[in-house]
Image 1 (cartoon, rainbow, N blue to C red):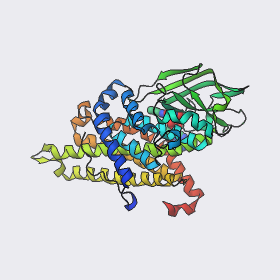
Image 2 (cartoon, helix red, strand yellow):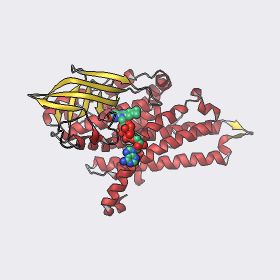
Image 3 (tube, helix red, strand yellow):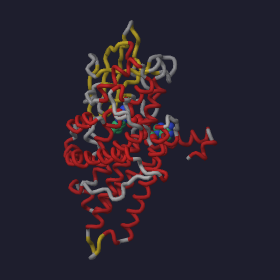
Image 4 (cartoon, rainbow, N blue to C red):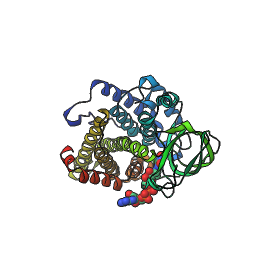
Length: 397
Ligand SMILES: Cc1cc2nc3c(=O)[nH]c(=O)nc-3n(C[C@H](O)[C@H](O)[C@H](O)COP(=O)(O)OP(=O)(O)OC[C@H]3O[C@@H](n4cnc5c(N)ncnc54)[C@H](O)[C@@H]3O)c2cc1C
C-alpha cells in the first residue's frame, strides 16, 4: 500500500486538532499495517474480516461515538468519519461494516432510545462483542422505504414479526438487527423500529448476495416467521419508524461519504506513485500532461469531497441538523470515488485491469457508494427539495 501523498486534512482553513490527528495516525497505522494486507484475498474469497472486526472492537472503534457512561469512546462525528475513511483506504468492506455499526444502529439508539435501552444494548455494541445490522430494504421497497411490507403485530407483551428483508449488510454475522416493520395498515408511512437479537427463534438468514464489490462484507436476506420479541424492544414511539430510519440514513450518509473518500484517496495515492515509477518512451508516465491532468482532477475532487464531509461532521458534532450538506458530501464523494478508481485503472493501463495490479477492486468497491444509503438520484432530490423549500439556505452552502 502506497504512503498517502498529501493527506493532511485542512477543512475550511482549519487543521485537524491534536486529538483528531492522533486518532487518524493510530487508525491509519492499524488500517495499513493490519487491514490492508488481507484485503485482496478476502475480496477474492468473499470472506468476512472477522479477526479485523474483533480487533477494532477491542480498540474501541466499534462504538466510537457511544458516551463513556455506556462503555464507548465518547468521540464525535468527525472522529467516526476519520476511522471509516482510513479503514476504507485499506479495505472498503471493513469501512462499511464499521459504518453500519456506528452510524446506522448505535446513533439511532443514542438519539431515540430510553436510558434503559441504552444501558441494555450499547455497552456490548461499544465493546465490539455485538455486531449490528440495519434492516430497512425489501424486494419492493428500496428508495421508497414507505412501501415496506414486513409486519409486526403487538400480541400481549410481544411483537410478532413476519416478512422478508433484503440486502442486509452484516446480515450473516450480526448479533443485533435494527429492524423496520409496518405496524399499521392504514397509512403507508406508518412504520415502527424494533431491536431484534439475531438468535431469536423465527429469524433466519436467507440468500447471500454474490456482489461486484465490498465482497468482504456480507449482504443477506433476513426471514422472519412468527418471530417474537418483547414489547420493550420498540425503539422510539410506535409509528415513528420511518423518521428513525431516515434520521439514521442522514447520519449514515457521512459514513458512506467517508468510505468513498478512503477509496478515492487510495486510488489517487497508488496511481500517482505508479505514474512516477512507470517509464514509457524514456520518461515517467507522470511527465505526460494527459496523466498529470488525471492526477490534478482526482486530487481536486478529493479535496472538495473532504471539505464537504468535514463540514457535515462539524454540523453533526454541534448537534446541528442539515439534510443537504450530508447529501452533498455523499453524492460528491461517491462519484469522486468511482471517478478516481476509473482514472487509477487508466493510469495503470493493462495492469490496472488485472487483479494483480490491485486497483480494479477500488472501482468495484466504489460503485456501491453511489447506491446504498440513498442513491445519487435520491441525494440530488434531497439537496434540491431542501433548497427549494428553504431558499434562505442557499447562502449556507
Ligand atoms: C451491497 C448492498 C448493501 C446494502 N445494505 C443495506 C443495508 O444494510 N440495509 C438496508 O436496509 N438496505 C441495504 N441495501 C439496499 C440499498 O439501500 C438499496 O439498494 C438502495 O436504497 C436502492 O434501492 P433499490 O435497490 O430498490 O433501487 P430502486 O429504488 O428500485 O431504484 C432503482 C433506480 O431508480 C432510481 N430511482 C428510484 N426512485 C427514483 C425517483 N423518485 N426519482 C429518480 N430516480 C429514482 C434510483 O436512484 C436507482 O437508480 C444494500 C444494497 C446493496 C446492493
